[in-house]
Image 1 (tube, helix red, strand yellow):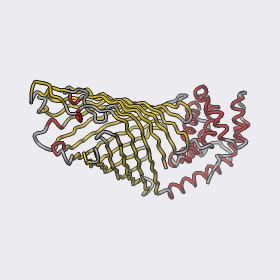
Image 2: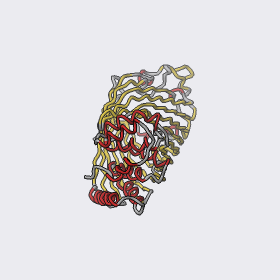
Image 3: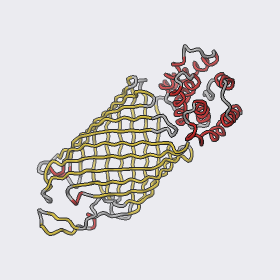
Image 4: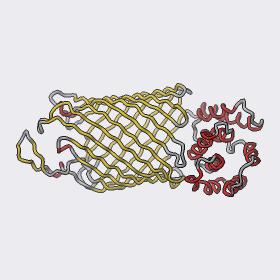
Length: 435
């Protein structure tokens, strides 16, 4: 296995004229002593002040890559190339970073962009070995398995997503307010949630991929509103240059208090376009059949489509932003229940920033408007919902393949019919192990 990028380049780096800088000089010394972790620990805490300086970013990237922080290395080299696209050292190192991340096609493109340029023969020879290794990996890496397990602990202010009103007026029954049962009023509780999943990807050819996944969770509370589910997907992806086309079948069985509440089976098609190393666009359409074994009138067909974009920005905190919009319909399958179907439109936006080398802060805000197809027979009004969801949290990667995530989410469902209006606060912490 190739372990070090282009010794000749590192020798050239040591001979390049650079301005006096005690920190960078010390980092170079540590790298020359083959102590990349020490160099990384010296440089990483300075990102807030020094990110954007090509000399600093280049050394940080090399130290990060050689000490196993591959994703952070890519961001550092991208900052160098944004300032100086002709920086051959950074171009070579980002190619190696992509190789280590197993993004072989991207690595191949970066290495090939250096071919024909004025670089030492030793470097060309090493590049040739990398390109040969990439071709070998693309041919040999046919099947890739991944998985995770996680545990969440937290507090839920409204485990049953119910109204806080103790009484409501039901015009179809009486003008006198009706007392709601305890199960129909919001209930708070602590929860513990266990989850896990596994996925597999098999490369048929360089352009065709098969993929499948399975996942499950169990969320326990002391109230009778414990939930669980298991589901999965299987699909095929066609790669067309920077474009990708995916078609997949998906399904899920959802339980409330150990009884089946809803079954989902459907298809999803998705298009993706990698505009550049920092920008990706996507679009999707989804067809789902929703069945409720104990509440058959609620059976529905859901069709939703949307578009989205993700952008990694330049900056000291390596910010990433995303946004999407969607719309669709959830049509009732049985006659006489138009109040159970609805049209919907919504959107979501958010992002993340790096607090330090092992901690990312993230947040998202979403909105969905639902217009129901007919008047509710009990409330003699056509339901309309406007739902807002907000989430903030942090990912702390405290060890290899381990992540601790404290997170707070808030939901406000503003409905014109009181019994459907509610708010909900969920706060907790998740411990996750990837493998």
